[in-house]
Image (cartoon, rainbow, N blue to C red):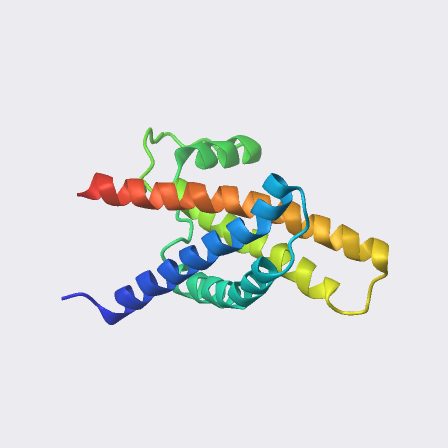
Length: 168
């Protein structure tokens, strides 16, 4: 029997992925392909999907934080680095990671960290707190963080799918 929490987690992830694709297409297509600023219906679609995406990210951060926490045996490279920095020598060297999802965990936390400047940069630009120059700076921050976010999101989805395929 499938747990209701598992179904909810997958549904929220699916909604976040759909909204993320819509946001990426409506945000980057006019700027990168057409050479224009986002306006009209794409802007309305972008502004409609953005709060849904932000809510899904917050829900995913809460629902996946336990599964994506880092543990002692996640990666021996980090253990060796800490041992080298502290001068402690551990006779037992582990060659393999216990967890196969270390990259997925790193990308999950990277997405959560990138979500903060991504959301705050555009929300702060909507308030009359900053002049024209700083609004342009905030838009640039939003654009570049969105690019990094999309790349990290694609890599995270790839690792998630690959892990599911390897499990089957």
